[in-house]
Amino acid sequence: MFRYTVIAIGKMKNRSLAMLCDDFSQRLKRQGNFELIELKDGDVESEGLRILEALAKRSDARIYAMAEEGMTRTSQRLADELYALQGRPAIFILGGAYGLSDTVKARADALFALSPLTFTHEIARMLVYEQLYRAVAIQTGSKYHHE
Image 1 (cartoon, one colour):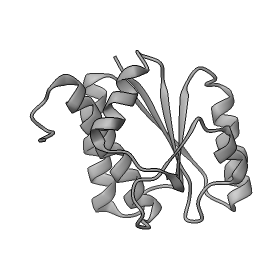
Image 2 (tube, one colour):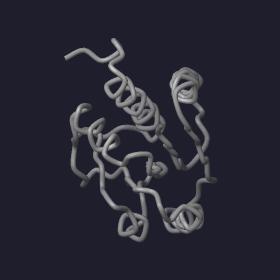
Image 3 (cartoon, one colour):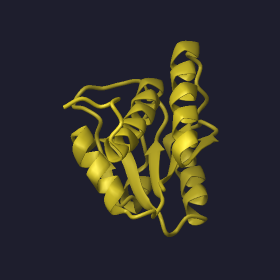
Image 4 (spheres, one colour):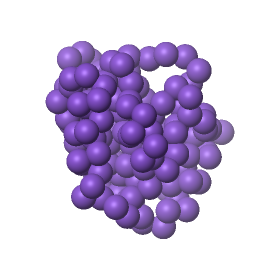
């Protein structure tokens, strides 16, 4: 069983994207343990401190920081990485409008880029939710993912 946590800065203001995130969140919760930790926005450094505080309670997790300089992955590769955790928690950190502090990036086990393109933090959150759901679908053999 999986244990995924998303730590995200700021609330979703775009209702359409929020509804998509809610849908994927509910789908994930039906199949495992999925949690969102939403932190208050501010400047990059204060956001970073709040993120590090949230991470302090979760020392056993594999931490992915979403960052443009990170490595991209295929959906299959992400599914394989998460499956290899064998139940160990995975945390995905999404910064605010100005990204993540260097201290948060240094704390992460992996820097993960969704694409070479730039997305709003709300679109990035929706994409992370969808890719986590897709990873579970790949692992369980669901017809959601097509090769």
